[in-house]
Length: 281
Image (tube, rainbow, N blue to C red; front, side, top):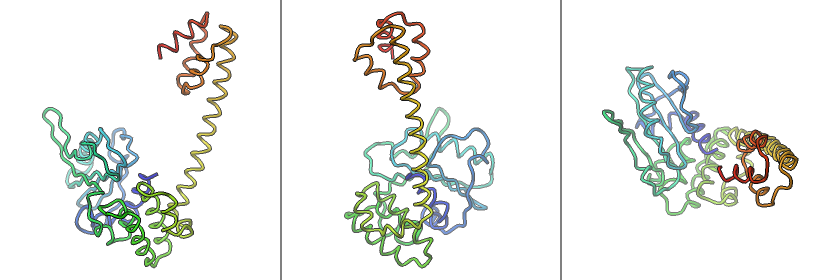
């Protein structure tokens, strides 16, 4: 959810993002990872934007990622293959404070190869940097501030001055979602008007996504429960009464292991075989 909000802001307010990360309001357009050939690396937080002269690669991270250095190098080479004459700016933006050394990593090195990229830890960035443009306002509460609630109130007041209603509602919803990383939901709703957020395409999209995910998870969980009940019945027919401790273990198995158990039970002759199979997991 947080990654999607950051990507929405980067795409919708690309000039604001360019002003922050490139130092000038360059007009940028979205670049799809599929345009860079090869099989894409799964990175939900990935954002690629380009102008005629430069490609901006931004990855928003809520937590440290040990693979980030490799991704930076990989996408640098992909962009070079596709656009050898364009320069490239690569930035990893960490949203939440972390003591991990990974949030300070700015290089990736393997024998005979050395690559560098930039890292921004939002909690170390000055607040006023994010109060200058609508597309940066949602990041303000994650910046260097001693009172996040008061910062969110300042952001809310600034959002209230935005004339375009659609822009206003989208920025408010984005600010509310990112504020959820550091503030209680009730306080966020109290500061940012709920009605304004409900008009936002961001808010509506996330609600729709949540409903879809809920239905999918419900269907999957339903299939898991059916499969678990069937396997328990088959096991009882095969080996007899199942001790409660083994039944409890089976009830906690994820879908993949349940499927494996369904195949293995055909070879069981006794409860001892089932016990041995569970011990080998």
